[in-house]
Amino acid sequence: WIWFDTQAKIDKYIGQSNNEEGKYSETGKLIQMVSAGFGDYIDSEASATFVGAGTDGVLAGPTSHTGAIKLAPASATSSTNGGGFIVKMPSCTSFNVCVSADSKMYVRLLGTPQSGVITTDYQVVSAKYTTVFRALSSAGIYNWLDMEQLNTGFEPIFTLTSSSTMYAYFQSLTNNNLYIHGLKVLKTQSPSGLNDVSGNSQKVLFVGKNILLSEKASIKVFNAQGALLKEANESSLDVADISKGVYVAKVTFNNRKIITKKIIIK
Image (cartoon, rainbow, N blue to C red; front, side):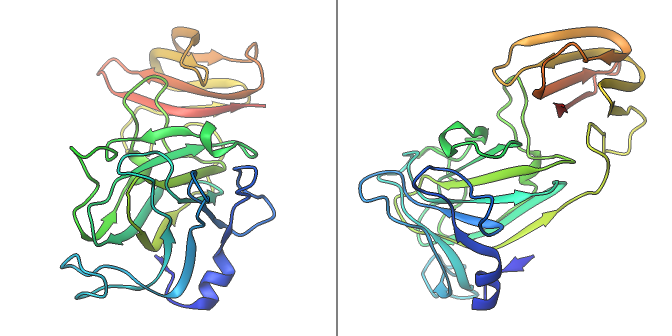
């Protein structure tokens, strides 16, 4: 975990995004704060002196953390205009966040594998915790773990799991301050492409411009809008005839095991 409990860590890792253009700044810090998207566009802030909520749901309560990114509130609960932060990951096999608040927490998670994308065009990874019917957590401290495994359940499936660059965008939909106390990100140095990290025998690789499987299976390739571009029931699929860009490949093996990952055609 990286805990934001000293000013030295905050100065090293955290800065403001390009809020004027609504983009992650490639010349900025690794973790970039996003302002609220309404009214006076209140900035999210970071300080080693911010004190979050304790286990009792009260600010500075029992076991509360000191040091945090304080996300600017949304205009109303469930409104998608609250503050947030973006973290650029060279790759991602695990993404976890420690967050606290003295109210229920409503959030959503977005992402993109491409630089220069405005925040409103990031793909939604999870919107499960955005309504009054389902909060991420009640008041207190919450460790949101295994966020890289989340997805909307809609085609094309998009997750933060990646062997190449991924931008993760955590946004508050809470009409109150959320305190982000720390992050834990695990990366991999494996080659770009697809791989099954479950340890099972079925494997999917992306080599050159070919999707290669350990056995014959159903392969489907979708564009970012969810349109099916190509499919086959083979042990490999050549995608050289597809234009450069980011796509999603869905492979279904005979035992109904499904592996869905991002591919980048260069």
